[in-house]
Image (cartoon, rainbow, N blue to C red; front, top):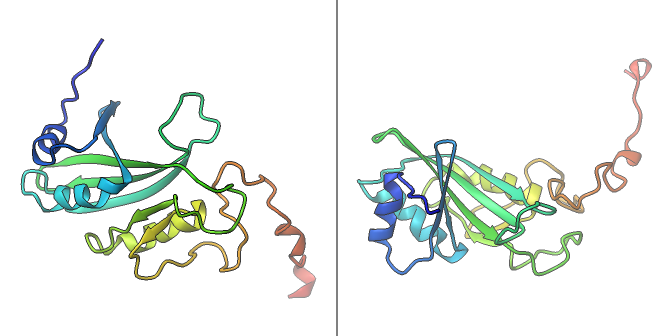
Length: 183
């Protein structure tokens, strides 16, 4: 049984960017474009600049770890861009999958977990990309200030990865207990 994706942005992308390997899904009225990481920046630039699409607002960037997911996925990690077009009153999601090339429990940067930054398209992406970097370890090429945002600079891991221990790796044991009498 085949289904037709009825969001107008799918047809627009297919015509405007031929030769690209795009996949699309729709679930509960939300449309998602799945693309190769190398095509991400050019596709997002087109979605922002073309008047027929006019996705002028980047609402959010999120990371997903599919470790242990019951269905086979094209990669372990995904970065999802939530786009909004005020002119056309449309929402559209763009997702890129990444597969690690190094063990994910290490702290060394993995070159396979790298995407192009979109801060040149939407300056507000700076903090969102920093959060994805801090929590998942996905780096963004050409980011103006890629530093940790929620954990300290020397934090030894990325806590939203599913192989990160639930109780942490000893971070809590080093805290000094402070009670009311100490204030």
